[in-house]
Amino acid sequence: MQNTGAMAGTPAPEAGERCFVVKLGGRPLADGRVLDTLAEDLAAVRRRGVRLTIVHGGGPQLSGLSDRMGIRTRKINGRRVTCAETLRLAKMVFAGEISTDVVAALRRHGAHGVGLSGVDGGVISAVRRSPVEMTNRETGKIEVVDFQHVGDIYGVDATVLGLLMDNGFIPVVASLAADDRGEVLNINADTVAADLAIALGADKLFMMSDVPGVLRDVGDADTRIRELTAADARALIRGGAVGDGMIPKLDGAIRTLEGGVAAIHLMDGRARHAILDELAAPGSHGTTITAVGGRSRSETVCVTEGGG
Image (cartoon, rainbow, N blue to C red; front, side):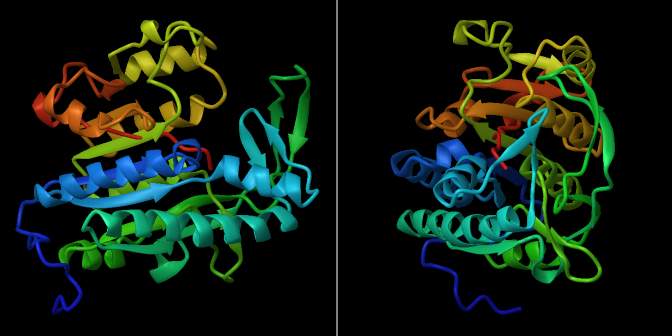
């Protein structure tokens, strides 16, 4: 395919280029100045010859619009129940406003983003989640929960993402998918980022959120854990040592490591130039999670969180 749209100064991709998947959480994206700095850093990483795919959530933005529209938001153990009205708003917020804002921010810094969702090009195939019995951590009661228009991924076809990256573009993927009948489903953005990182054979997964990493004391940023193994992460989840919002991120990190990605970095997307700093000086930001311990050299993954 001929690249007719690559911006002047964008390096031509070369065989053997590294690939990073960067998950941007909804809270960092809510601040225009933060988004601008993230876009600046990602454009710089792209100019260094790294192939990039961005995945974004938008949970806070969706909750805010739901409140303004008078639609009740319900979450169970950090997972959103997506009714028909919430799904309609999710399509507006995720694939509309946020996607456009991210692509525009990249453009300001000389990078070409292309906004799409998991529905486009059959990137993500999902099925509607069946009702599940679970213990509500807030009430302590066991209940059967129907998440309604929430999907679970069963397949990924990254062909269109590869074509875009091959031609110098940065795919910007909203966390929506569809089933075989074309029913649109809301997917947890951390899960989307993990599955895409595996499918793309990514070297790194960056998960950017509004927390500085995994903390021993959630009220004290100085208790940041700089390194974890997958076994450590499992132990934290089993022991109830992490909050509901961190659980899907750690679950995604573990699955991503098992899928062959070298390292995951959970980072605060609001910290200026955190990605560039971490690449230059591993350990300076966030929590690095690896399969068996020990950083993967200066190439250690940088990641983001999500609010999907």
